[in-house]
Amino acid sequence: MKPYKNKINKIRSFALSLIFIGFVIMYGAIFFKENAVLVIIFMTLGLLCIIGSTATYAWIGLLSTRAIVVACPSCQKHTKVLGRVDMCMYCNEPLTLDPNLIGKEFDQSYNNKTKSKTQEIDSK
Ligand SMILES: [Zn+2]
Image 1 (cartoon, rainbow, N blue to C red):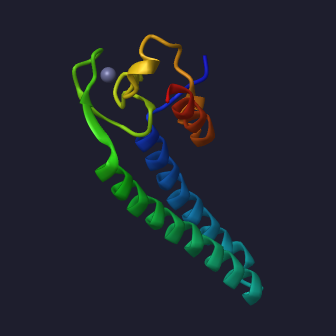
Image 2: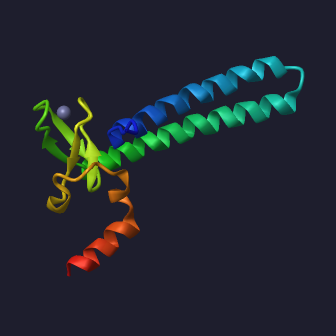
């Protein structure tokens, strides 16, 4: 089984790692202090990573407002579900908002837009 994670948590850890990468790249500029052009390139890349991370955090904030809060049936905690299928933030219990998917094997592809569209057409 693939290690699925809650989408909001996944994006959050991505944004966090982006900050670290940004700092590491900026720190790397120290080793090229003889070459002003390289320092500028490294500093810009590092800054871009940090800006990207900030943008990702803003994006999470936006997604969180659209996510649906549900009580996890397994650990009773409140978790946010994004899309048709998602994992519990705390215990990685697969959760779905689509009654058609209840009891089915968890599959990340249920979130695939084209696939869900064809399924909607089928049900009409
Ligand atoms: Zn849970």
